[in-house]
Length: 122
Image 1: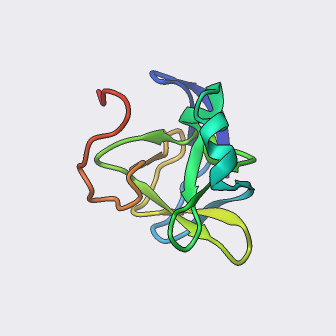
Image 2 (image 1 turned 120 degrees about the horizontal axis):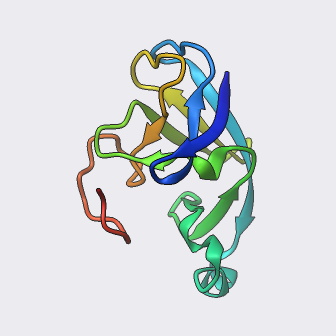
């Protein structure tokens, strides 16, 4: 259903076939990192790849699989949800995504959130 290909942002996740609105695109298992370890993690290359995690977002999690390779857009065609019970980040299509199209999520979590990020958005 998805594949990793070269993107204008480095690597990205692309639809290998047409994905319908509402369809589960990917369920990425996570490794949860407690807050006391996060301070060390944010000083590593993994800083750009973790998700805020927990009921109160007091932890972070590294998404495995393709989970940490989705690129950001303020006009995303997908969204993600933290599934705390299953310890996965679940990615869903917000609209129909054509085969060959790159799949984007809003890193702020809410697809409509235009708030600033830790990097300059193109």
